[in-house]
Length: 219
Image (cartoon, rainbow, N blue to C red; front, side, top):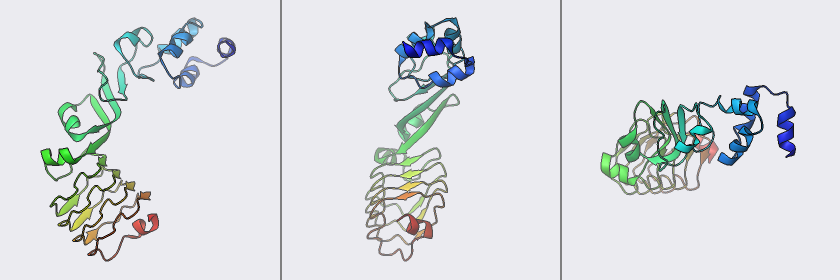
C-alpha cells in the first residue's frame, strides 16, 4: 500500500513511470498498477513491446503491443504483431524452419542433430556451437561465421581429421575440452574478443605448436 501511495503522489512523468514498471514480474503487478488511477492506465498505453511473456488475454492491459518478445520456443505467437523476437535458446533446425523478416532469434545453437541434417558447414546466424556438436566427426576445416559468440564444452572433441579452425572475430568463450584430442589440429587464428576459455580446451592437440596470445592469456 505504501508503494501505491508513493506512485499516486509521485512527480514522475509517464515515460519515467514506464521505465520503472517495466521491471514488474507478472501480469497481476500490471493489473494492480493500472487500477491506481487514470494516469497509471495511460502509462500502459506506451508499451509497444511486452515486458513480460505475452498472451492474447493481455491485450486488455497492453493494447498497443506490436513487438512480441518470446522467452520460450513453445510460447505462441500473438496474431497481428509487427515483429517476434526470441530470447530463448533454439536449435538451428527450428530457426531454419520458422525464421523470416518478422522473426528474430537472439540465441541459435548448432547441435549434433543439425550437423547430421545440414552438414558440417556452420551457417550464418548461428550464435553457439552446441555440446558435442562435432564430436568424433571427420571434419577437416572449421570456418565460423562472425555471428558465433560461444563454443560449448566438447564441441569438437576427438575430431581426428581437423587441421584448421578459423574462429569468429566475435567469439567470447570456448568451453572445457572443446578441442580435446584433436590430434591433427595445426592452425587456429587469434580470437581477439575472447573472454573465457575452459579447462583442457586444447589438451591432446599434439600437432598444435603454439597458441595465439589471446588464448594463452585467457587460459
